[in-house]
Length: 254
Image (cartoon, rainbow, N blue to C red; front, side, top):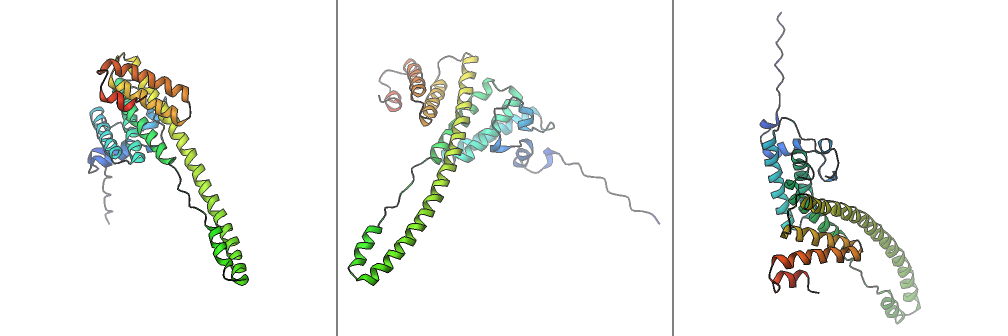
């Protein structure tokens, strides 16, 4: 009796997975959890060796475009996710301080800044009306008043529990926003370092980077550093545009 010959195993490659999105998922590991600032980018990024340099950089461009689209739609979490992965690919192929990484570093840092600002938005407080309820109930007699007082005590207890939950959620958001701000500062400072290392001179890109750094400093309540970065940005901007240019008045009204 002849045994059936086993079928040869199919070798799957990234090139035949059916879509570029599948290639992206296999090419980059870590997503938003990666800091995109590790010294060993090979381990952080996990680029598959059989993708090829040209295709990997093409994917980085696509990720950057997706990040820009998400940013315009105010989806800052998704934008940061795409920019992070694009930066990992570029950092692996060009080096972390290569000029090719400058724009993505800025975009990633800016997305993280906006994400942190969104997370620390003002909480809406509900006005308390217990006093009004008690005053109205007293007009309807002692029995009604007693019942209302018991209801008020129970309501106060529920409100206290709700306040505790809101406070816990606010603290959690604060912790996450602080991490986002720290990473945003690192990315923007890396972009600044790239511009200085490459001796790119005074450009609008440098104005944007310094302005974003000033915003991060302001969010972290580092007023002195914030003013310093704003002044540097303004000094460069004044060299690039006319003194009465609208951008100076819009960005630096003081």
